[in-house]
Length: 315
Image (cartoon, rainbow, N blue to C red; front, side):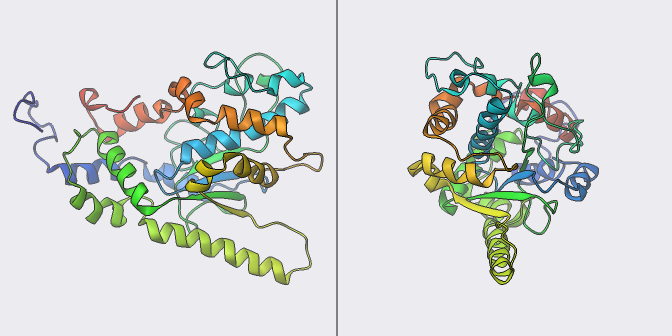
């Protein structure tokens, strides 16, 4: 805190705890033990898809890509006109049918925070609005996760995004202190690297997280190579850099991976236009409130005990 900051009320944890320790303490309270257990012990369907990342590796971007892909297929199954999935860059924020949700975590629950947010992981997932949206579940169900390959709920399919560790560090450093109610610069880069980024994060250290998912993918590939069954690997690895360089190619791969029913077709060029357009930076920025984590932040900040005056970065 700067010298000009207003005095804190007696008993306030800010000022009585060094910023790094305060960030550690608050971060450790982000998910209740019951909610973590609920997420890890959940039994998913084989068709469910988890978007698993180390924090700040493109989680929200990948979530939007996967959500838009399932919405394209959803529209076709509902018999919606082709114009519904024709990308219109002039469309107003929230106007497209696939954006009928308050905040994306409401239609793609965060596995170990769902219980704390009064969400049931076993529930179907729906877009909001009138019929047919309100009564026709989205398929596949999608879940957000930062869990390791060891800890994540077993039995589903997993899209794992990796990113250049240096970029992850800078992004995480800019993000987490503010998310935990601290002022910019309150924790030094060196202290952050030695603590949170090196393993104090709930997701563990970055390298173990990446390697755990790579090992799981490769072990699955070896097992499938020895099997006579024609099944696909349940882990798809994608890099953040590939998403930037070739979003269309990544969307095409995701479209194949997210097939859940025999009748699901490969994404057409028009489908890809829609998916990539709706998941582009400029489009998502227009719908910023749908991607700002406010659905989980207010509940989390209240539980962690962050005073409202220290709520930063949305919510």
